[in-house]
Image (tube, rainbow, N blue to C red; front, side, top):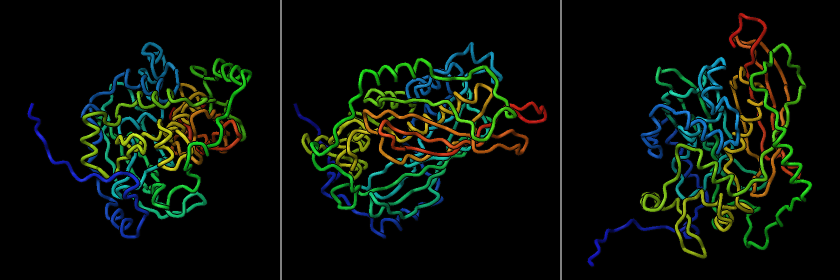
Length: 396
């Protein structure tokens, strides 16, 4: 059989050309500041009306939240919204917020995000997004000598032309291990990795009980007047993280990475962004490090790790469990501060830090954070939640 051949672009394997960050590369990236980007990673289906299934899938699989407000049509009809609404981080499924143009061959790492919500996202809405780079910052830390933070902005607009949410995201661009400029804690050999945490059966049963007794306010009303500075939010646990949890996160999204034929086509278009397995020579998307320990080490992680957005999701879950069906998360800011590895258990905590009546709304300010089983903080942030008030002149 005669096979037709085509000429593919010259491919550059990870490690053969893994550049450190030069001033010229950073200057080129800065030229893209303010340019509205063509978001061809998203499919046309994104601009179709949102279904209950879209929202339920994100809540159940990507967040791990079985709140009926996000999944049950009959339940939602009885709330003040009258329809299924989306969790605070659902807009990641419309546009991921990963805005990191330029810098080919430099690994991107999700570092944090800031949501400012103006309106709820409802089943039946059609949401479009515009995205652009708004800043490029040179940074250094104890783990990385020199890296870049690309700050992106996304505007999400509904079918009525209303601004639903303004989002900012931080994407760190960090040289790969072999460039000499990657993470200092990168593991060179698999046998150098720290031993996995082994849970006792008592610990597993305590985790199971924590899930069985998880607090959710639901239809009960929390009034702004009844909240006090210093109040603690009921703890929410997530984990121990498994590969199934990470796959579930991907399954809940409306936008995912290309596979098989389409993945090879993407490889041809963006060869510097491809990783090749050192032992198998298989080309992989950079996200493979979330599943594959070998690729995780190449990126500079000590093992397979979560998508950083997952922990921002968990903060949203913490807030909506606490505020109940009548609450509305107006702002959600968060940073991931330490890798969350397969096997880690994260407990999400929150504390009321302030409250005020502002622009016709009763707002509560909250500090939140996550802590793993080794008592290490792996994420933190701030939030503002609008609550119902006994002052009927205020917006609920």
